[in-house]
Image (cartoon, rainbow over all chains, first blue to last red; front, side, top):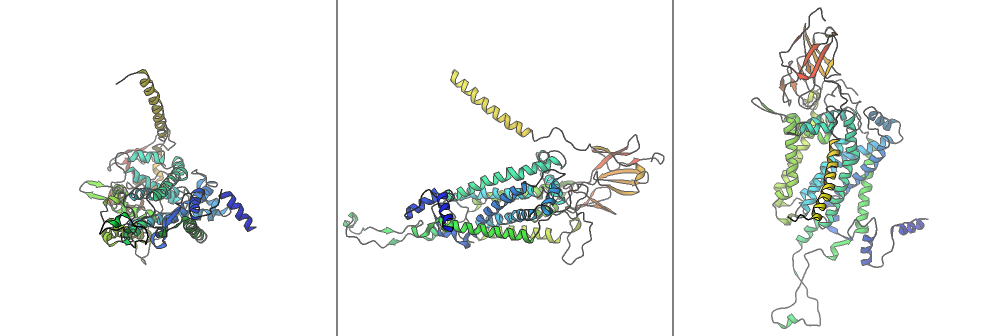
Length: 433
Length: 152
C-alpha cells in the first residue's frame, strides 16, 4: 500500500528520475515543487543559529493566515448589522469555528512579532549590504503590509475595539497636512464610520493587502536567489584567504617551469567550494517542512488554549474606558497621547507629531539604513560584528524603547489613560461587554 | 518634425488608447468619493428644554452634552478634539478615556494631548418646542440660549 502511494507520488510529481549527482541537481529544477529552490545551497545559510529560520516562519504564518482567512470568509458577513453576529456564530454555532478564528488571530499577532524579529536578525547580522539593500527595503514594506493587514483585520468583527480603533486610526490620518481630510474621507467612505467603512476595510483586508503582500513576498524570495543566497555566505567567503595550494604532482612540465624563478601556483578559491554546498532537496526542503510544521503546531496549540478576544458590539455612543489599541499599536497610542506640543498660543497635536511625523521618520531611517551604514564590508553576515557595535546598540535601544512604551500602555494605563502602578487600586469602570 | 500621415495616425492611435486607459483609472478612483451620504443631518432635535435637569446631561445618540443652568442652555460636543473618542463628564471636568485629555467645564483644555477646546454647537428652540442643535455651526463660549419658564 505504502509503496503504491509512493510510486503514485513519483509518477505525478516526476517525469523522470536521476541517475547521477548532476542529474539530481537538474531534477530540482525540473520538479514543480522544488524549482523555487536553487539546485544547491550553502551549508552556512542553513545554520539554525544564523537565521533562526524566522523568514521561513513568517512565510508559514502567511500561509496559515491565507488558508484560515479564506475559510473565515465563508462565514463572515461584511455588514454592520450582521458582522458581529457572524463572529458570534463562528464562536458558538459553527463546528470548530472558534478554533479557526483563534488560529487566524494568533497567527496574525505572531506574524507581527516574527516579521519584526526577522528584521532585527537581518539588522544584527548586517545582511543588507550591496545588492541586498533592495531586499531590505522590500522587507520594510512587507513589515508595513503586515501591520496594515492586522489593522484592517481587527476592524472586521465590528466590536468596540474595532470601532474605536478605526475612530482613532482614521483621525490620525486626518491630521496629515493638506491631504489628511481627503484620506480620511475615502477611508471611511463618508464623514462617519459606517457600512461603507466596513466594506472598504473588508476588501482591503481580504483582497488588496494580501495580494500585495503575496506578490511582494514572491519578489522577496526571488531577490534572495538573485543576490546569491543569505548573507551568511559572505562571511564564509570573507573568512577564506587566498593561499597557495600544494601543486599537484605531474609528469608534464609546464612552459613556466622553463623560466627560472617562476613556477605554477594553484591558489585556493575565495568563493564557495563544492564542499560548502549541499543539494537543496532534501537538505533545505526537509528543514522548511519542519519549520512549517512547528509553526503550524504552535499556532494550533495557541488556538486551542487561548480564545481570541471579542468585545461588545460596536457602540458609537460609549467609548470603552480605557480604550486600548492591540499591543503592537499601543506604543503609537502612547506617542499620540504624549507628544502634543504647546508653545505660546501655537499647538501641534500629538496626532500629527506622534502619529504621523515620528513614525514616518522612524520608517524613513529604517528604509534608508543600508545607505547610512558605513561599516566595513567584512561585517556582512556576521552576528553582532564589533565594527557595527554602535549601530546595533542604536537598533536595540530603539526596540527596547518601543517595548517599554508597549509595557506601559498594556500594564500601567488604567481608566482615563492614567498611570496605575502595580498594586495601586484602579477605579471600577462600567464595562459595556 | 516630420509630420507625415503615418506618424500622426500612430500618435492619435496610441494617444487615444493611453487617454482612455488613464480616463478609466481616473473614473475608478473617482468612484471611491461617494456622492450620496446616508448620514444623519447636522441639524437635529433633542428633547424639550424642560426635560433636562440642571447641570450636565449626556446625549449618547448625538455624542454631546446639554448643559442647563436654570433657564440658560448650551450644548458642548462630547467628541474629543484629539482623536475623536467620547469625553466623559466627571463632576468638575471632562475626561477622555482614549489618551487622557482633560477639559474645563467650558470645554477648554486643562491638560493632555487635545490640541483645542471642545466644540460648542449653535442651539435654538424649534417651533414645536424642542431644543434644536446645528452641529455644523459652532458658537463662541459665551453663547447661552435663554428659555423662558412659560415656554419650557
